[in-house]
Length: 220
Image (cartoon, rainbow, N blue to C red):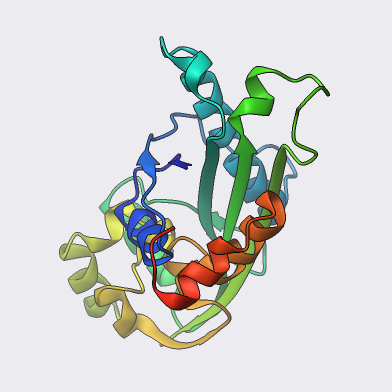
C-alpha cells in the first residue's frame, strides 16, 4: 500500500492497523472552489491526491511491475457551522485567528479518504480489471473548545505545535488542553479514521485481514 501523505501522524495510525505503507507525499494545489461545501472539498482533495500519486507511479521506470498497489490518500479540514474552512495556518497570526474563532465553540473535523487501485489506473480496461477501482469517503467528528484567553492562545501558538495542523491545533499533543469535549472518532481528528478505514478496506479489497489483523494487533 502507498500512503499519499507526509503526515507522521497518518503513518503512525496506519502502522497501528498493522499496515506499514510506502510513503509517497502528493503535491497538489489545495484550493476551495466557489460555493464548494466542506465535505465535498475534503473528499475531492483526497481523490486528487490519490490520482496525483498514480501519475507519479506511472513515471517510475518499473511501473509495469507495479500491479496490486493500493494508493491511500487523505485530507483533513476543520470547519464551522457558518461554512468557514480552516486548513493549516499560513503564519502565526493566522493560527491565532483560527484558535480565536474556535474558542468556546463546537466545530467539525472532517477527513476525506480516497482509495485507488494502481493496476486499474494504468490499464483501464474491463478485462481483468477489479470491479471496484476507486472509492472515497468522509468521516466527521465534532469538537468543542473551552473559552480560550488571548494569553492561552499565544502560549499555545508559541509552542509551534499548531503550525502544521488543520485548524491550528493537535488534539494528540498540547492541543488536548483546548478541548472540552469530543463527539465521534478521536483518531479522525488526529488525521485518519482508522476504525472506518479498516472496514472500507475490507469492502474495497474483499480481504477481511485488514480488520482482523488490526483487531488482533498483527501486521498485515
